[in-house]
Length: 158
Image (cartoon, rainbow, N blue to C red):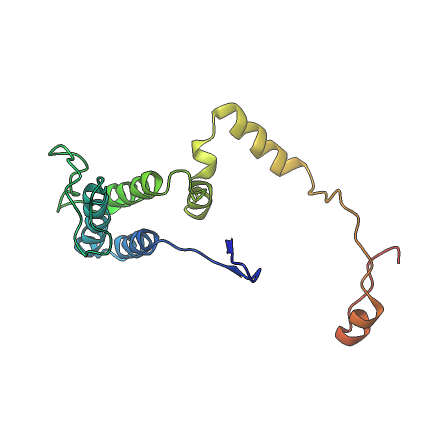
């Protein structure tokens, strides 16, 4: 989230994020060629988007990035199933490194617990099964106006 000078918060989303979300959805719907094309579009941009000094800003073409051949090759056309999903998830991992999206991707796809070290995973699973969730912050009273307007029960202790 970003704030402008008027102190209004607005969301920032990268086009690569949209493309990779669409690729993941396409892969899950068995539209493998569409998913591969979308990932390759992101990779093509990554291969060619480094602008060396002296590049004209505002042009629609990218200057050569002097990337060695074979760096970041396109996905294989026959990729499908779990292998394709793994390739898309890997692409999200490297494309959005340092953007704090990986944890949410792991949680969203149900892979978070599987990547934890065994001892941490065991502690997390045993805690989740035996401990109750405790909110250490006390509940504040609901204002009388809100409680009456919305017909809300008052928090305990008030």
